[in-house]
Image 1 (cartoon, rainbow, N blue to C red):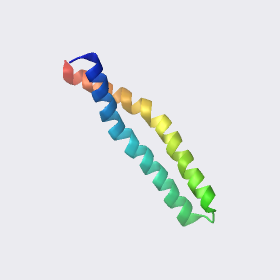
Image 2: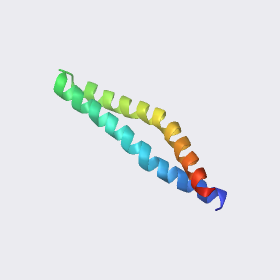
Image 3: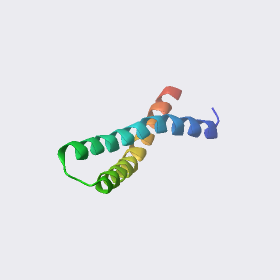
Image 4: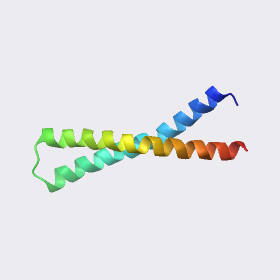
Length: 76
């Protein structure tokens, strides 16, 4: 396979994994903040965006490297 095509495939597969992880973490935070605390709407939405962004930053390199390793194993 061409290198550019491989990179696109790895990026797409990775995005399909790390985006749901980040969105799920953000929604879980929103649910927890809504059910357990007496927080304002701005605090809940701001916290949700913050958790979603941070989980995206953490999950992205981890998932990409794992998908890339798995793809390399299947190519051998």
